[in-house]
Image 1 (cartoon, helix red, strand yellow):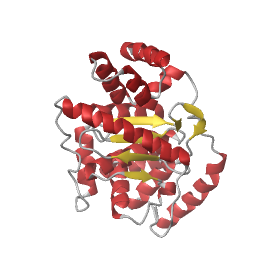
Image 2: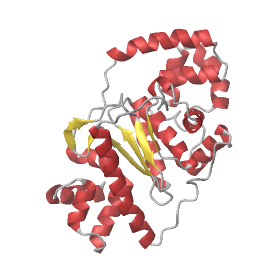
Image 3: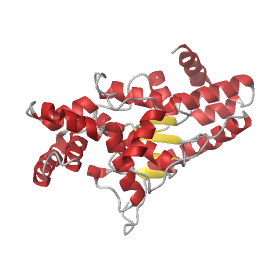
Image 4: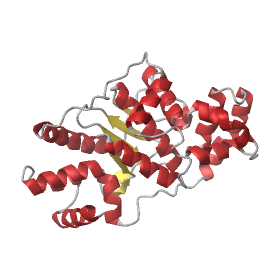
Length: 303
């Protein structure tokens, strides 16, 4: 946020951060006691590094090509795939639109899109599940950049107008390059233009928002600033009438792997089974009751 402002955070955001801090504290200790080595890529980059190099290193670590989104059918599939690849590296990813499991305490995506709490044993990325899917993609990529730089943060990213902060600016650049590689976009630009709506075509191909597509086109000098401003004005006027379909409804147990995080859930279940974690503490860490924890454990193991 702008350093001249005096930000106040909602109780929902504060409580959500506290939940993640509690989970991280336990997981870090558990991993150290289990003899797990720290993650070498955390804190591996700094503000002097090129954003393209950082983006490429993240893609390499996640075992992704620069065209990884092109064969995926939609935003939901792409986001789940990216979350899975991220967790395979040792990063914990949680996506939730409410505080814990309290559906009466919804998170406001206009307040924050996500946050990251960096740790070289148990880094946690939280994605605000009430946000648009295409925005969630950018948030996850942005938070990954924070992990490589080793800086925790709450991300606003409102209309891509970042804070006057070098780290935030660099993380935005990394996220944009990670999701929409410049060389690939330049190569395919004429194809996108021929569709009549290049930003929509880019958004569908790379699974990002049209705003990211337009801003990326501007950064690569594929369009003029006046073209971007014209698009931006229309885009902003459309936002209030858009409806976000990503609500925190649906099947309770299907939501839990996202609300708890698959990697974290697996660690808690394993620790409880081996006796190094009391079940009552497992319930507290996951936000589940004894009954729902048992049902979740059974379903989680069979998925």
